[in-house]
Length: 229
Image 1: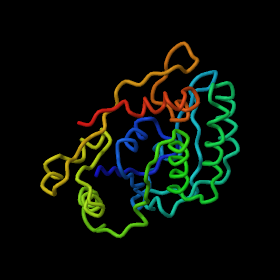
Image 2: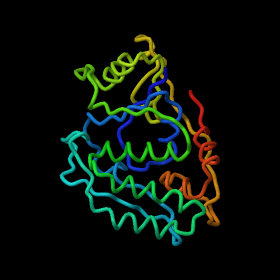
Image 3: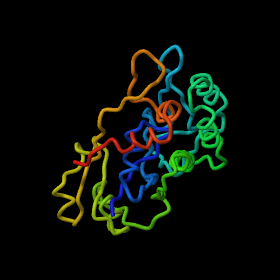
């Protein structure tokens, strides 16, 4: 069984969704410290005049607090208007915008809950079944190092493979996991390109841009555009 674990991000880039796609079970890592000034609560979309950033505020955000105790602001009208203005003429706007709205207006404002709602909405739209759990809901050994915690989560679910994003190469080594009976692999993306209705392709935008411009079949093909190393 292949397990992936990652902090929650709001409509992240396609590489994050490829990590979900590659795993049999995806754990939303919300019992760790919040990442301030990162892309947890913001990302980039493509407006008619170029790239713009949307942000949903997190009141009281601090790197001294866990994700599991922090909530997104309920004031999302401006963000919804930004996305609507950016993609109102996109080919799949009518299908995708309701997913964005339902996620951003989700009643449970906890960061992990809103992000999970978005993940589930995207994969449901694509007709792909995926399993998600929050680590804050689990009973496992949290006393060790970051590596030890991940190994404990693998053992909790009987996973023989742990999948990580490419940036994990700076943090974890294959031998350390192998001695615990776990095959550490990294999900590396192949080059991504699709029609954005613009003259020059702009990479690394929010998954919103992919969904707005590509059919579900095309999105699914892009989600499979990775290799395990």
